[in-house]
Image (cartoon, rainbow, N blue to C red; front, side):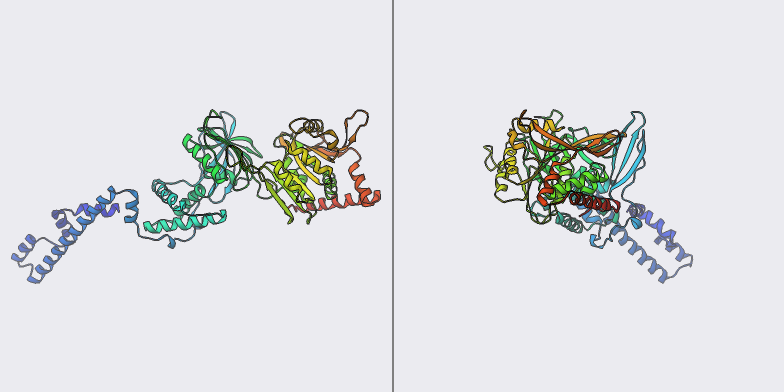
Length: 573
């Protein structure tokens, strides 16, 4: 286009045009007359020259008109320029191929930092670079996404504005269909603009549109990273922090401005089926991918502005084999849990925050017989079971300010007991529902749950006192407590089942609950040791009519299966 404008400018006046003709051996009328007088021309040549000059004048007029149009186009907004300048439909563009078209993203380093790690989180669109700041001696989680040029940014914003209108009338329920619908709409918009766009540019624009309209915006690369456990935003203009399995607490290169963060929080709440506002500025929810999120809006309850914390959902549930590989449980302790769960012993996982209670509960639930009827009750959906005879229950918030329409854990539990479950799984016990839960245990329902407590004594204390208030005699219905803890082994964070304890009975003299330690973690050796005889296994032996040898054979058989699965790296189901 610049070359064309240069040619037009060069021949915009007649003298320039005649000079240009002379370069091609065509003279002016005056020159022709001189040549004729000199006897160097004839009538036929003069006619040809006159026709050429006439044609040139017409061409000059056309070029003048074309230059005027170009000048007018430059004054038009982007939308009109796009329609006018380009003439190719997007359907004709071949699919993006990294080997043929080159990479979409690149990173050449950051001043003052050295690179210590790099890995893809959403290939070929986004990767992560772990950087070490030499001066401050700290780490940075650098997100690298496709770079957009000036035209690409303008065109992306234009399509965004069009898509907002288009998607308002599009009722898309399925998450799987949203991306396909979005791509279709983008192609339709590009076709309307008749834009000539290359493969790489289209791929980059589609990435950002899908990221922002279908997935999680700026957070999308973090949501793709399987090494991240938690994501925290502590306010506007503050780096997003995350908990990384290898690098622990680490700031990222992602920062939200104030208005941007407020809009993002409101959108996340809406996508999670919740409402958040200044009147109700705190919300707990499950995100579309199953991750748990807690959000606050504005400065009413958090002085740095809106905040959120995401506990990421694992696409593939943790299995008993994973727990053994991570040394959370030993082969022997897992075989023990397998046999007791199969034989209807009730179990509670207790521990501090992020000690792996729910993960362990989900994993050992795979030992429940395949056809057994299971009912799960949770505030936020976390448990994933492969069993076909399973009813998952989730609490519901109120529709109105007077709490009308709310369904809490107590309501769910009462309904669940009418469904005759063989196994009842409660995400966490912390209120009045616990009394009903222990009543269910006392009447023969096998129950699994979790609670916050760092020892058997503190677990029993919490159960006996408000707001839970379970009578001591009812606590006898609980068979096993597994105490989980987050510890450090050789400087690396790890999770261990530090103790597996059985509830034996109540001492008739002291009225204290008697317990029996079955397995305990040895911190010096980092192994889980068998430390006591099991009352639960003895009960199973009597109930099944087994001899001691048969009981040991059953335990050994399960332990060998677990060893085989670990040895052959079989952890799915």
